[in-house]
Amino acid sequence: MKRPNASISHEDAIVQELRDDPAFAAEYLKAALEETDEPKVLLIALRQIAEARGGLARVAKAAGIERESLYRALSPRGNPRLSTLVAVTKAVGLKLTVEADRPARRVRPGHRQVSQRVKRVDSSRGDSPSLKRRSR
Image (cartoon, rainbow, N blue to C red; front, side):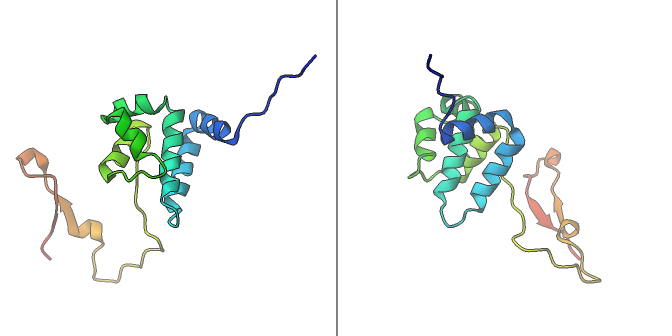
């Protein structure tokens, strides 16, 4: 009697792990973002995550993007807009973030941190939700 072939491809194993473990998916995408020498790594990783989260058609619908456009954007030769990347990451339950490349400098006495110098305009007053500097 023949034994069934229990092996699966590396690609299928990655997609399965991405499907089963949201924390792994977040770390996988973060590692792809850090691969600055090869930007298409990000597109491949995001495509694999989309496939794991229900397929590209379902993710495209959730992101409000045409399916064909998403296939093109996440292809190895794709060149998606930032708005597309943000919509897709949100649709798969992740978000893009930015962090300092090196440790932050210590704040000198007498200087306020950026968060103390910047305030968000209250959008309930009808102002646009933009950032404005406080006067010193």
